[in-house]
Image 1 (cartoon, rainbow, N blue to C red):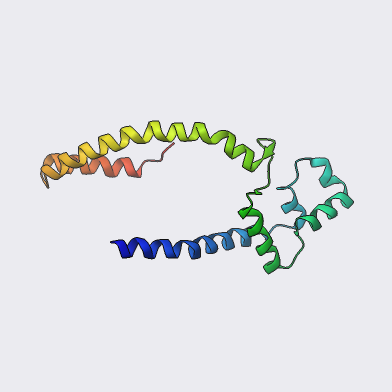
Image 2: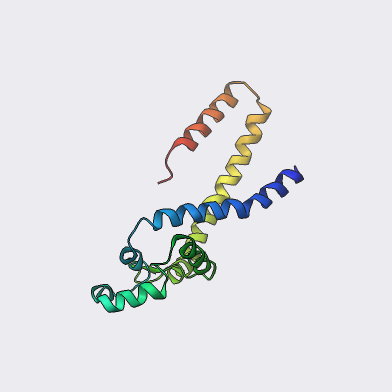
Length: 149
């Protein structure tokens, strides 16, 4: 079991690199001007061609694919995640501002789920393959298949 966990942790950087590469591939399908919109908080800047070109050069949005990918990963590592149009602030600030409420929701929802899940799991294990076990298993499968919203 320990070797399995170690192997998974060793594969984690490769998986993260692959995920970032796929995200950048999709992101690079957009034009430099469309990609610039994720970094700029003032829509009037996009209307000014000289300012837009200056920002495209600043964020390396017109670089060749490999150089653009390396620069993009560096920005992500520095937590430069761009600008949120809906929150009207940087994505990093929007996430950090909303994280405490999200954590509170997660904790308040996961504690009862764990307690009820362990209790039902013990009951199901004690009554292995009888009607009560089948009922608990069916309810659990239905619960997993329902959307969370």
